[in-house]
Length: 62
Image (cartoon, rainbow, N blue to C red; front, side, top):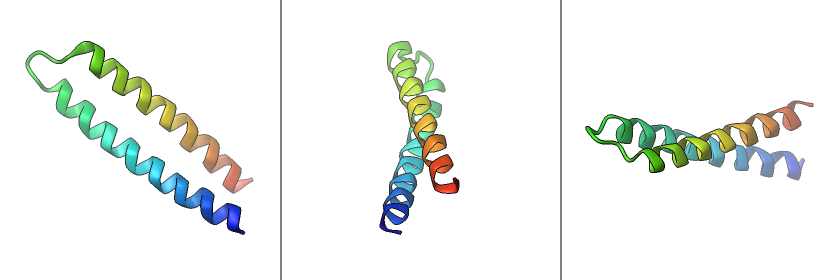
């Protein structure tokens, strides 16, 4: 039970960080001259977070 609560809390934190990255990516992408390296870095980080979120969700369900 404690593992499930800790995993759920961690998952919530990861989801919030993923939303923040989405916002940052959207904001950066709408600049006239977006920093391509920074944008790509944020996108890679967001993808790694999404993979972690999906993995944790699978562990909680199964």
